[in-house]
Structures are given as C-alpha cells and as structure tokens.
Length: 261
Ligand SMILES: Nc1ncnc2c1ncn2[C@@H]1O[C@H](COP(=O)(O)OP(=O)(O)O)[C@@H](O)[C@H]1O
Ligand SMILES: [Mg+2]
Image 1: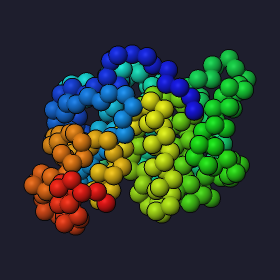
Image 2: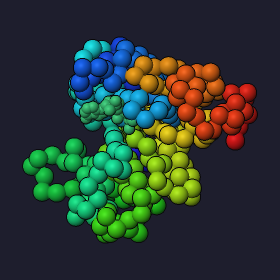
Image 3: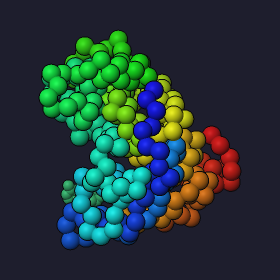
C-alpha cells in the first residue's frame, strides 16, 4: 500500500461554519468539526439530511455559501489530489464500456503528465496493488457493467486507493451488497485506516455503525452530534433526528448502554 504523502501537523479535515445550498434553503447549515488523520468516520442521518452534500463539499466540488473546508490545512478546492471519492452506486453509468483495469487506472490520471504517452511502470504498479488489495485482480479485463454490485464497489475502492490520496470519501459503499462483500469491504477500509489514511463513509445502517466506525457524525442539515459511537447513538438524540421513524431502536438502546453487537 502507498504511504500517505502528507506529513503535516494540520488536521486531515477541518470543516468550519460550512453552509451549502442548492436552492433557497440550505442543505447544510453551519457545520463545524475536525478530524485527525488515521480515522474511520461514519456519517449518519435520515434521507435528504445532507450526507452526500457534505461529502461533495469536502471533495471541493460544491461551493459553500459560507464557511470553508481545509484538507491538511489547504482549502479543499486546491487540495483535490489529497482526496479520493467513491460515489454512490446510483451515480455511475454502468453501461459505459470500460474494463475494471481502466476504471482503476483513472485514479492515476491526476499523476500522469500530459506529455507522457501512457501510464508508467509506477502507475501500473499502483493499479496492480490496488486491485490486489480489493481482491479484484482476476477481473481486470471484465467490463464494469458485468460485475455484481459488491464487485463494482470494490473496483471503485481500488480506483480511490490507486490515486494514493490521504483522505477517502465513500458514499454508502455498503448499499445493496451482500454480507460477505460488506465484510470484505470493511476489511479494506480498516487496513486503509491502519496505513494512516482518513476515511469518511456515509452509512445508512445504524445497527452496525458502532462496530464499524471510530467516530460518527450525525447530521440533518445541522451537525447534531460528533464523537465516539456510544456518545452519538443516544436514543433521545436519534429519535429527535429521525423523528421516531427508527426500526432498530431496541438494539440501539443496547449500544447506548455500552453493549456491542
Ligand atoms: N442537485 C440538487 N439540486 C437540488 N437539491 C438537491 C440536490 N442534491 C441534493 N439536494 C437536496 O439537498 C438536501 C440534501 O441532499 P443529500 O445531500 O443528497 O442528502 P442525503 O445524502 O443525506 O440523502 C435534500 O433536501 C435534497 O433534496
Ligand atoms: Mg446521499
């Protein structure tokens, strides 16, 4: 695995008074938090609460109305190379005729100089390493449209790893994958974290959130809570944010009491 390139004492991610709108009312309002490097952080909140908008703001592709995002001390719009993005599956055109290997090589394009004829040995090595890490090397010549949902997620994870970015943003990577794939992906996220990278993962399943993440961000337009899972997964807080629409309530009561699934 590629070692993180940044050796900076600034926080990996610093969000300050972030306010973002698509229309008249803000999707995110006055969000502030900061993350030290080497953490696996979950983003939770109901549908439409602004989770994907937060990811896009950290990525630097949404312009805030107010506030700012800094990555290792650099404004996010100038720090695109330090961050990699694994989009929500619905946001990708799976009929696009590219192979697994080509998708992962796209992660290297930022590093390939314009005068080069093609990928270098080093680019190829990063692509091979990334495909091995997610165990997709046997599928390298397969068209992406001919993969299962879980395999597609692993390919996009490989693309993010091949990019060598220190911060990885994943939008609902476990949506629509089977339990074995979820476990395999989680192992990749864990080993990526242990290599010193920072991962921010939008997650829809509150029942597994405490087990998977070091800390959680609970958002619904505003940041309702940020901290260790046991601190964030409080029934009172969740019923306020989810407005009682929560199925896994009894289970979460156990989590809040310090129990683990
Ligand atoms: N492209 C867009 N144009 C207009 N409104 C949008 C757009 N994307 C998201 N929104 C709105 O912003 C809010 C937050 O959306 P989003 O960040 O996608 O939430 P989540 O990922 O938590 O489901 C929602 O009210 C949504 O309808
Ligand atoms: Mg979303």
